[in-house]
Length: 125
Length: 90
Length: 213
Image (tube, rainbow over all chains, first blue to last red; front, side, top):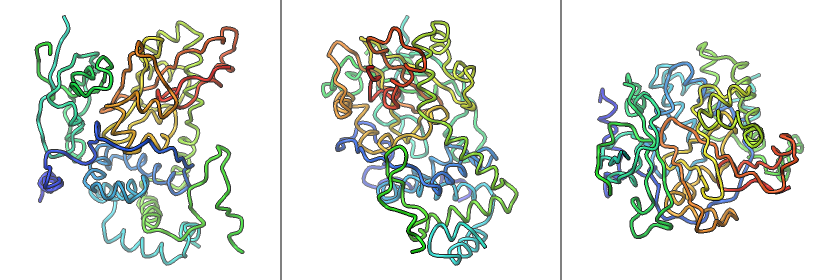
């Protein structure tokens, strides 16, 4: 599994191996949704982390897209846009050597112990 | 001379930027954009060769056949040169 | 009531609800965001100030920037020519901080209506117009626009005569696109500032037209 492409070969729909879920141009779909929201601070921070991670050479926008694609259609349907982005940014940063999985696990445990809301957890005392 | 090109009907399983709905379709080069690093390598953190990138214009009739909403409407997409081959007028 | 300053019904200045944030229970993905951010700071990759500055930079990018570009293109033939030749350079030369963005301007006329989509993800000229609207990233818009653009346009309230050709642009690679909407009738004596107020975000994506005064 040294070559990430070997792993990638498994990331298709067994029933339709040549068509990948994100490649949706031309599909039938319902009305275009009109809901709109303003971005919250945590979403803006995810956006900033993507730009900064890429600017520091840890990954490219195509690396971001690759992981988003490999996360699969279920993630597209069930997670919000920036939830998917932080998952992809994180995985690209680990692949790029910015920190280790163990360091992430320890930090996430530390963060979630700070409080029950984003406001409390994002502001270490 | 209008240069017709066909999008190669390749079906690689990895990260590519050529939409499925255009594969095998014939269009014309609307303009050439210069060379850009191959996203198929960038996606995996590999060294990427810069490849010529072209804007290709298709008619909706070419893309969707008899199902086209308006046959003479057009669709433009950026396609890397390794996905294109010369073609005769459709 | 420690959280009574957070009102779920409160609308932002743009009239949209804020997405739940500080006032809801901490989610797994929010935990990950905080952890990733703090790790990058601890490792010396970035600083809290740099993250804040990046957010400020993105917040400053908004449709109003594109509207100024359009209004100038409507009134300044030399700029118009430069914009159609190389929209990235023309926009940078106008003073907008769009980074290395490769931008192409496509112009609507009586004969042609341009419309932008990204079927593979959500490519958008964010360095000029800011972050894309939610619908631009939706399955419906990404799927249908390349196949039935007129039907999608009708949902946005835009109906075109059969004699107007629709050109859909799928942002598949390194270019980003801005639509220069047609200049509305009856605007001959308006200033660039007044004209810019007529240019909506959707008119620069091609799902709308410029407002009439």
